[in-house]
Amino acid sequence: MKQLAILSLCALMFIGVVTVCGAQELVLHLPLDELSGDVAADVSEFGNDATFKGNPKLIDGVFGKAVAFDGKTSAQIPDHASLDIVEAITIEFWVFIEGGEAIQSGVEKGAAWVSGLYNLAALYNGGTILQFFDLPDACNDENIGPSIQDGEWHFLAGTWDGDTIRLYIDGELEADMACKGKLSPNDDALFIGARGGSGRFLTGALDEIKMYNYALTKEELLADMEQPFALAVDARDKLATTWARLKSR
Image 1 (cartoon, one colour):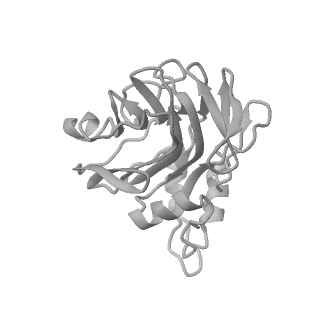
Image 2 (tube, rainbow, N blue to C red):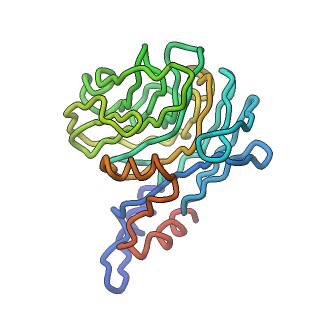
């Protein structure tokens, strides 16, 4: 039913624009400057708020506050059409790691290694990685970047444009791999700081989590790194807000 609804919306005609489908958009932005109870608000148009379980604590971050993760804490965002990304993606966040498991998830769509999963891992067997279940096997776990497990803040970003995975640390390209394909969406939640809320827990902190449904350039990533609110979503599509509201109904 969800797919039929989306297809119906894609068929809508608006003056001057054929469709709102395929718009390049910011689909998630968690500044993590405050918590309302156990909820961190998403300030994108889609309202993908994150609900924490465990013991989240606000600490000083890179920009304002950040959330500390103690190796038992995680957050969950319910499945939403805006998070069912299949053609291109950017995931980014500020992170510091201090001990913990050998693999520590950052932002992951899915509770297990299943179709539709994408994951930007803050720590992956001594390095960092952006991985996808649906791409060729080598693309799943071989494009590993350097370790950032040093107790310092780092800006970690992963992009995929349908052809190439790129992993950036502090604005510099550290690993890339040709990976052509298309992702399949799943109905799982988006998890932050743990796989499925039950393993691969982050020990450290996260700040300024953002996701786009397209691949940012290095220049755009640098703009986000220097000021998280500096990069505006492309204003050419005036129907972005309308599309967001339609999808939320």
